[in-house]
Every structure is written in C-alpha cells, then in structure tokens.
Image (cartoon, rainbow, N blue to C red; front, side, top):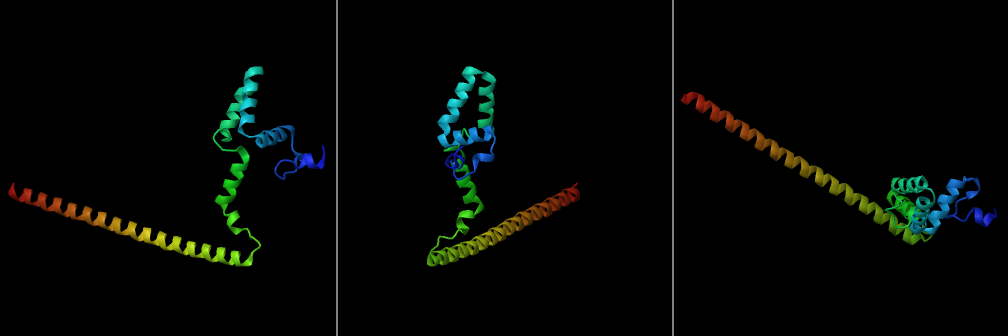
Length: 148
C-alpha cells in the first residue's frame, strides 16, 4: 500500500487498521449511498450479511446521519468546544473571540441564576398556596366539628 493510500481517509493512518476498519473507512468516504448499496448486495448474495449491515448501520446511526462519519466528527468537535478553542492565527480576532466567549459565559451564568431565582420564587409561591389551603381545610374541619 502506498503512503498516499495509507492516509487517504481524512488524514487517518490506515496501515494499522484491519480489513473491516479499512472497509468501513472506504464506505464512509463514499457516503451513505455506498452503505446502502453494500447492504442491498449483502441481502442479494447472503441475507445474514445484509441483515448484519443493516443492524450495524442502525446501531451506529449511519442510516440517519447526513454524511456518515464526517458529520459526526464535526458535530462532536463543535459540541466539545474544540472548535471554539482553536486559534485562528489572527491575534486581533482571537482576542475578540476570547472576549465574546467570556461575555457569553457571563450572560449564561446570569441567566442560569435568574432561572434559579425564578424556580425558587415559584416553589415558594406553590408552598405558600399549599400551606394556605391546608390551614383553610383545618379551619373548615374545626367549624364542622363545632357545629356537630
């Protein structure tokens, strides 16, 4: 295998990968259509293989992603905050980005504390209402006992 072919899958070194991993990488490069074609061919030639591919595609969420593995990696990077921490090379932009992120974190903390105060106020209101109803029922029961 040539070095170019060994690193053909998005910069991954495929030399140490097994044939299953290499096949998966190749299908991912080709997209969802290749996965579906492999599944159909699996059903045509040996139905348990097609069933196994279908189960794997559902289990790994390949059936429902837009472009197989690439979209998953980009989403994972965005979700983990890795993209936000990466430097752009432009110091002015990096300073602006750091200040904006700090400001957004402060706003998030303020909003979360606001929500907490709102929840506490709602809980106190509900508890006060419960105690008032309980006291009212106790007074009514006392009056009924006195009348009887």
